[in-house]
Image: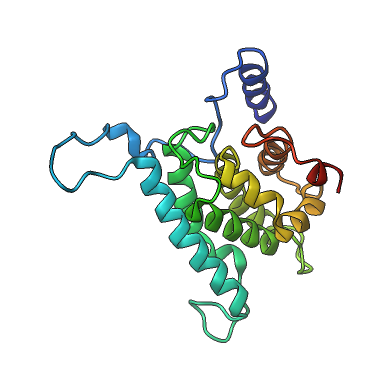
Length: 220
């Protein structure tokens, strides 16, 4: 089944040049904020925020908070005295990422185009930081724990793919040490779907049209 789905997806993108086709890790109908339609335009002072910007704001808030917690604590936030479980601490980031992925096309349409957008740069830094703690298999358990970590990483990779379509996302990612740390772990991912999206992110960075090629970055 997975092979068939990936083949259809690859054909849609490679042959039909349809980059809006994608496969999520769960049914996205309940996460897609755009299905309700855009808010009615009004001439009032307060204008509604666009769905992509709202999703970006939420992802920025939750991802930066989660990464800050993971960087400063070693104990679980729900079970005092127990060792922190990275996958469990990222549950809200996963849900927000799924909402982000369902509401924003893979092309990143609707996201800010400024190369210095602070929310995109913040998301990029936080999400790669979270992945740097998820992907390395520091524990001895390579079965249940490893599978759980990879399931959590999948929607995060999908969100990063969208963010890396923007100038700020591309620039922020290639300059991060945490992104470079994650590269060596991509080949060891056991879950096919997670590895598929991790490699799509890598391809997006290598073929990005967000800015002109930087020779120094290419050859370092």
